[in-house]
Image (tube, rainbow, N blue to C red; front, side, top):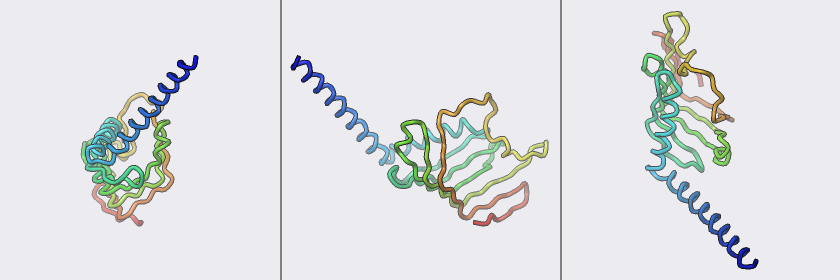
Length: 166
């Protein structure tokens, strides 16, 4: 009986050690260019499949423990031309909620934002329907933003250009 408990203890200790090593490897990987590139590819693919005209992300820098800096974010309209462009997006993501498919953005600061408001033939704005058509499904992830800021933004409605106030 004692031998069995000893082996169970060793197995549990081994499992805990394996989990610690796996978490450590992931945390080290996301702090490398390769790891941030893997994150960028996954986020870009998700955005690309969500929006009618697709989306692109230029680069991700920073640390998951502090702020991630996402450069050159572009969400295209149905005409495959940029509808929303963000030169630099600084986000702070709480890591623990990610385990339960909850994205909690403590801050979202966007610099040099440009929104192009084009009209459809019906007169409605294209941006009114940015997502790809299809059946409405329950989102696998829940998104929550505590603080959103935009600096140096502008919007263009068809041919007009308006400066947005900070």
